[in-house]
Image (cartoon, rainbow, N blue to C red):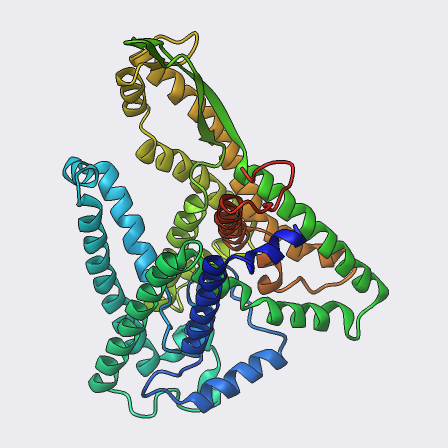
Length: 460
């Protein structure tokens, strides 16, 4: 593997692509730290120092999702405050609409149809960014304390010295421009770099919180701690390696369905007769069920916090849907199962696959072509989805379980920023993106007669 990394710099084209991605990553991280106009950067810096002195702010899944899609830009109110989230939301919406609406489904299969859908996605991104930017500008100008990231910031000073309509307008225009710039950078990274640009931006945003997480881990368990705390840190690193290895194995796991093609004789040549395989992924929905579940569960608490801050039922709802509540993970687990089957039912079309196999002369041995093949694929995918949903539920609840482990020898649970690397959306995204980059790099190396990351076989 070390030789494979060394060989990447011997290929001029691959080296240029990697350097281009690294330059774009630097630009993305610089944009996070450029404070938006009309916002007092000194107040934000002092507020962040106060949070660090208290041992970090722990808003659970809210902190995790904000870190994933903005890389700290939302907490710092930087140029990329909204991050790539509007584009991700628009992409998910268009995927669902393409699968549900026959016109869009037909358009996606036509020549140039995919470009049209990409244009629609960008228009929807602008609309979502304008709505989110306007809402965020209004909140920080009128009542920044209502946002969990800025709780207690009024004690430091005025976050927005000159609030008003002009500030909201300039703020919204700037954050929308930042989102569009980030979307353009992602497209350029995909075209001129290596890997998927949008996914790389999300991964870099996740990794950006690693130094802070290590500092919190040192402060909470090692600095001034007990020998049990230091031993627990060693256990955490070993457990992290195990979790990453298991996640890689499950992410790449697939059920290979044998496809036999009938023999055809054309002139003196014989075509077909060979056996190919149809791979069905165990975790077909990937990270989407977790994103849907966390987004939906966050809506009731947000509405209750904004509209009914003192109502007793609102406080009860916040306690039930708090990230450290068992009921939160029970409800989220049920929703993950539902959205796993929903995503598979929407995106996986066994009837279309069966029809394509029938047209090309392929069939599954022991299964009749047509409707029986579609039923077999649907039944197989249903069982795989059940196993994948169990995996997603365990991964989703794992950070909470790790955060409660220190209670065995201490009363303070671990901060969510630390435990976020042990599961949930962060781990799944990082593993998927890194595997995709390794596949593309290995393909480039093998094309030029270099050894890939695995000498004995290709990275599947």
